[in-house]
Length: 164
Image (cartoon, rainbow, N blue to C red; front, side, top):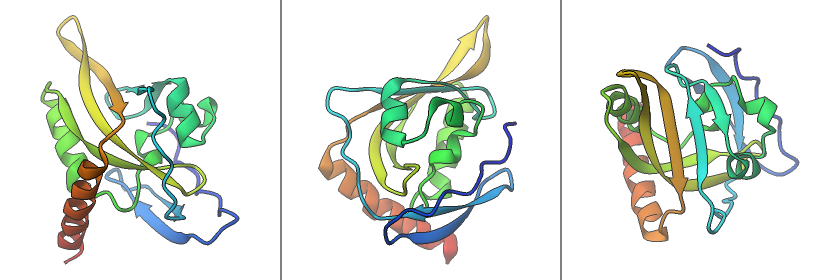
């Protein structure tokens, strides 16, 4: 496991302060400005993690859109990018699918270092070496606006059910 992720820095603009608690029991304070960053045209955002979800590789597009430096990402839990609007069940489905050795697809809202966010269409696949899963690769593409709108509605409903 990486070290606990430090709390986010408060941005120089209005932002909602939220404390997120993750599946491993750790928590951190993040800020949501509500500002969406456009997905970079013609780019794929790629990362790899170990079996515990700790980042072992990020590409330049990942670094650029997230706002983090490479050394702030490598060795950290991938959930450093978790947006408070994302329901826990979406991540449970992702991990259950990947850990079962299958490919997962879905729409994900990620939180940038500065409190802005971006949407991706993610594909997560297990990295298998000699018959053993050694980690996971996630490749993100630009999602269509209509799919983002549908995901926003679905995730809002799922979040309500979590808290209800």
